[in-house]
Image (tube, rainbow, N blue to C red):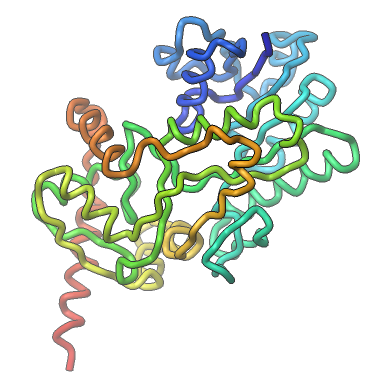
Length: 341
């Protein structure tokens, strides 16, 4: 049986992968993390509770094991992937790094995005750090044969998290609550920019097809679903699932970026560097490498799965009065602007 070490393993993306691998029984799965969500792990998944930055302890726990794959889900800056190379060079046949589709050039030069699209994002440090990680890992592949596969997700969600365009520091609940109460919500731009959403179970299917795949070594692969929606459609679908009407207030993205900065929100990165840009993903490369990839959970189904979970789990309903007040101020400003002569 092949062996995989998953660094993280209990996040939005990685949980679905962990569970699918465990259910299929073709891989011996070990997760390495701090143990904060151990309760969600299947019984046949082994766990190493350790801080990945404690390199000596990681070496003790992993010993001389040679992994068929090491999957990195929580590497955000170059120092973290440099650490992984120190730990796993010569000890893995494949190292799969989660990057981000936000690394693609902004503003987009073409609405259709492929793995060959230039990487450059002047708006978001998060994306620039991911680019730097990719560049380091590919250099290690070219010069030292480190067997890297780079994966670029776009907006992947699960049953605990409903995608919305603009939210506060406590996540999307405040927006969901406003929709269900009939209150207006902010949608950036005119609501017609295109966005791709992928349920984590679908993402996992594409990802697993890359594991142990020799054709994926030295390659970057984007993994997204095939469903593309406008931000208006996304919010309207949420409202329909809540059996109410959407009251959208369209706000220019650059206005949100400037005003949001004063209130501690990084909408320059999240909107100008990502969500406000219309993109459609060309997934031909993914489907050549991972033919089982398909969209089985369209958003109208995924949002109902997520709402069922969130509405039945009070701990998922995190009020955000600061964001609520911010929303009201922005909407008031937009309404006031309409009366100007």
